[in-house]
Amino acid sequence: MYLAHFGLQEMPFGITPDTAFFYPGSSAQQALNTLLVACDAGEGFVKITGEVGAGKTLLCRKLLSLLQAPQHSQYCTAYIPNPMMDPRSLLFALADEIGLQLPERADQHLLFKAINSHLLKLGAQGKRLLLCMDEAQSMPLPTLEALRLLSNLETEKRKLLQIVLFGQPELEHKLARREIRQLTQRISFQYHLQAMPRDEMRAYLAHRIAHAGGNPHLMQSGAADAIWRASRGIARVANLLAHKSLLAAYGMGAPQVQKQHVRRAVADTPASHSFWPRAWLRWI
Image (cartoon, rainbow, N blue to C red; front, side, top):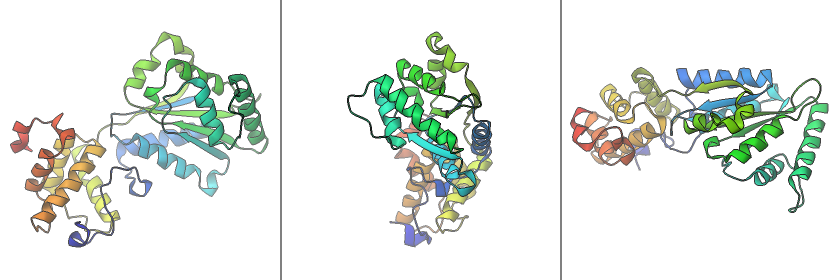
């Protein structure tokens, strides 16, 4: 591949969320700050929304990694990446995440009781559980209602469980349904991830290249701007285009990524065609 050609130690633009490559851009950092403040408050639901590929899963994993540090020892965390399941399955998934072994035939009452007992034990140790739900827009309404019931678990002083919902904009429409207005009223903190502006995209691309051991000026400013225009500031699409641009530059023996390499990448990336029809490639 192009690693040796560009002096890179690892692939800088993978699409698998890797917290080592987290870039604290303006929107991502504000979202992370909102999450940390919400965790300290310890009450209610937290909602983070953003377009497909905007970086929600990476943000979720960054939060979980921060809460595993020694200075945050009061937190226990659970992560459910795909909550498109019925209420009973969700309870089993949560029980499994927190280490509870329960009979397969356990009904919802037993599941709630076992989870509540575990949370009370954590509370007695001065700990609390933070549950992160990725792809929350896919949850059926009965499952969202089960989440609301879980959030009722509390002592006289504080909640035993805090829930963070990460989802696409469709989550907003689902939460606007009258049937689950009780849950919506419990959302105490929320943030919508924005696409990256042009200057931030330049810094983002340079950051990832530098973290991978390369020259942060490996990508010419015109090429970085072309990636920003073609991706509309969406991180995942930018990563795809940057990776393919590096491949194109390597294939042509170029020492830097130029706009012509980005054009080739855009032509080979269907995800960018929803933003820019092929006929517009000459303007990128």
